[in-house]
Length: 334
Image (cartoon, rainbow, N blue to C red; front, side, top):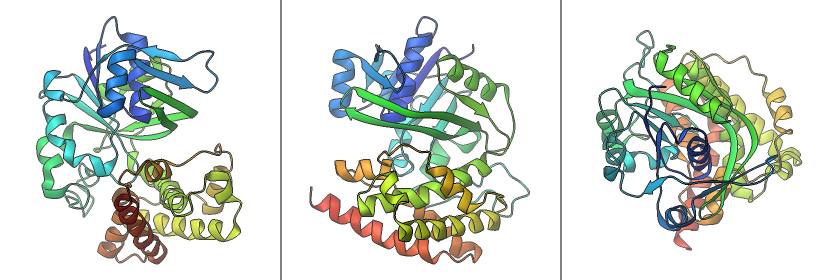
């Protein structure tokens, strides 16, 4: 299989689900470990990592090595990060401690990733480092975009209590390399995930997938946090739906401005969203838990790239100001 040591760095909702499924499916031939923290880590160590899935007959309880100190795990063949974009820079040294020259790093991220402008020599922005997403270039320097495999996840999940993860609305994990290649590594990783019971596929156009999902994330996540509403109430309010449509339209225009023209129809994308279960978005989950919100990868970078490319993003900018203030006030009150 090629990957004898695999670490899931950030075993929260989706990361925890992947860790549990890998541990259950290939623990005999692969050393599966996870980096977690706090009560979640303590519960995993004591009772194992419990995974609940819609449609499953019973919860899956996986036993695996778990730690909050990645240096104890040694070099890995594969690292899969379950951290959000605004959490990655602080974890750069920990991730780097797991790497050897050939280690690949799958980064499951919403929004624009820190490595976005690597690997496309014909793109006028190629090589541009995004300070907002990678302060001081620490990720670029310690991990390196050349070893990254991007991942766009259409898979809902939530840590319902420490040590227990719920995966729902099972769909796809889409893997792609920054250079738009289809290496043996990426095919092997997709096969590994599929073998574990997940649904993984590869693409040579990962940026189109990133922008396509960002249309949804930029619209649904901040508005759900601002209103504290789940998916169905949001889509039941005509005024909010109109605001979502404007956000999606701005994101689609910005994608074209950086060389990724999208053919997605905004109205159709909103209609398709009505099939999503009535769940809490990840940003609403973080808000209610008092955690910092994932604002920069979903909205802040849209506004920044809009200014760079001369693409108007007025609705995104307004929502950015509102949700940033919400984030500050929410954390202050805790």
